[in-house]
Amino acid sequence: MEVKSTSKYVRLSPKKARDVARAIQGLPASSAMDILNFTPKKAAQLIGKTLKTAMADAEHNFKLDAESLTIKEATIGIGPALKRFKPRAKGSAGAIRRPTSHIFITLTDAPAPAKKAKAAKAGE
Image 1 (cartoon, rainbow, N blue to C red):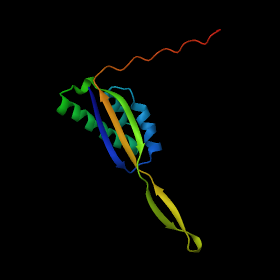
Image 2 (image 1 turned 180 degrees about the horizontal axis):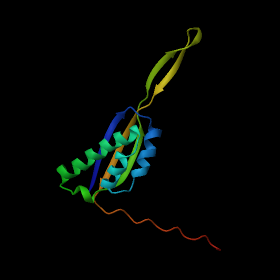
Image 3 (image 1 turned 120 degrees about the horizontal axis):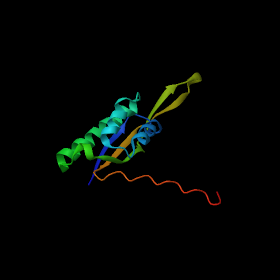
Image 4 (image 1 turned 90 degrees about the horizontal axis):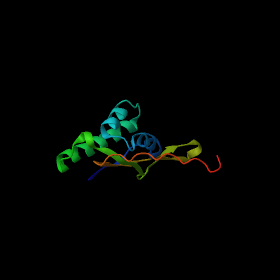
């Protein structure tokens, strides 16, 4: 069973949020929460909020055990940018883009797949 949770229009750059999302992908949900609680970034707090929502949905709506959940996918999408202008010299204006993100987290109750060992290069 897969459980999906989203947070849209989060005031955070997608580039900054992707670093944190990559760190938790494929981990058990409880381990991911521990990592997010001790990561000193704004993205960690926002992704943690979305992860808590997904875990609560899994428990309440689908009667799944929170300890058995694994993060199948944690992706960050690009949201619309807020466009602002700042005054510049000689009466001109400089554009400022304030990016937003969409956070998508998918949990599954299936065990995480084992990582495959890389094959040795031919001729070695």
